Length: 265
Image 1 (cartoon, rainbow, N blue to C red):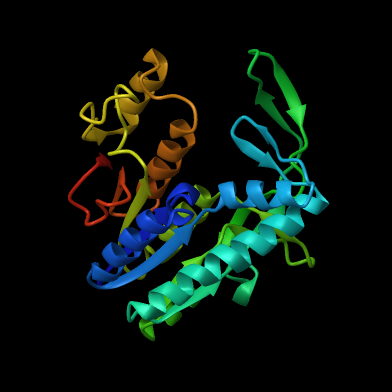
Image 2 (cartoon, rainbow, N blue to C red):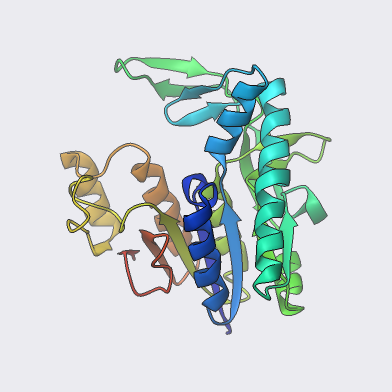
């Protein structure tokens, strides 16, 4: 099968001009078929504040009420997504910006009440509002687009096919996209962000963990080496591997050539 690379880039990278330019240059240089998945949370928080809308985060996840849904739709599906698409066109990449609603490419359901561990250690049932948990990604449709030389640029928005857009975690979007394309391509999924990979010491970029398996992940969780937002990222990676994705790499945004970072296997 032909090779395909799915790159997920965090909002912190796409919202800074210097890092975005470097990322798009490196992305353009990747050989073969590719998909870009982006976040944009910081921009959403900033614009919400300008509009007088308060952002609420619980356990690292955004609570998305009706007003915040308008903001993330504007920011993720519009401002951030179309800026990336336009910039890729300037790099000679024929990109197409997509939310999950476009061509019904990613279907989800509204997240039910969920028990969340709070900062004080207690557990509480939380209503995250208009947040989507993915049910299905149409890999055949994406593969058809890619076969025509189009590079999908996926925004972190899905839909429930009842007329509602839903805010959806970008790491999840990337993982579901990679899994859906695995039957059609030899897929490598790369999560890129501001660090060299999974670090033993978050303050030391040289403390990179080069390989993580399901077994070592459990050990790292138990001893606290891996914690916080890195846990769901690695869980997404392991799930992708178990669903046909060839390899998953967590790496720095300026090292997305597949030769750096932490390899999940």
